[in-house]
Image (cartoon, rainbow, N blue to C red; front, side):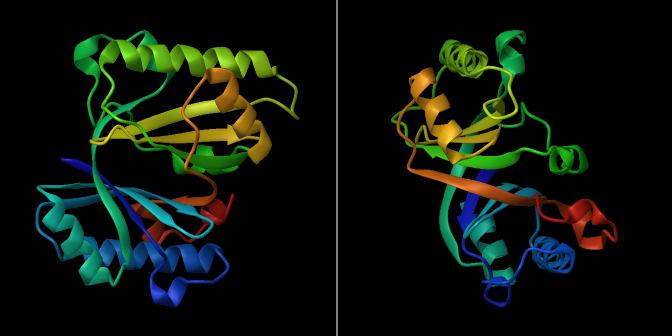
Length: 217
């Protein structure tokens, strides 16, 4: 099973600048805790302004909470990822879509992109079916086209996760938060409960990284 775990920063990292050293230390903490829990895998974490959003694989929620306990990670919410999707949902067969439909980010390519990155959380009421996923993708792409290609307005929807409550976690590249809000209005999506800037993305390889690739974005 795949999970989205929302948490605050572990105490020693709270309020610290997210530079290479801090990100590597945070990744090492998450990876060490992962190695202490059986049948568990840490995929990646979106490091946001005040929160962490981690994509994890485990047998059940108890394993997610055990990982948090091992790493002294203050969990705020754990939910099961029912599906992940991106623009390719418009071309892929129905059978191809599930919790692991979207591959983990190429962190170097993602962080090298000059636009700001945002995580948008939209409450929902049910897990969408395949046709609804396609409708959401069409609405996203139509909205991005409407906004145009100028550097000051160009926005890209990268991918989304949907949990068991229908909550959507959407990863967007955009010039600023106002452009994210405009995109949401144009697409006709539910009002976001959270729009937060992604300051970095880390994964297990970050724990041993010695390059500038892991700096904030």
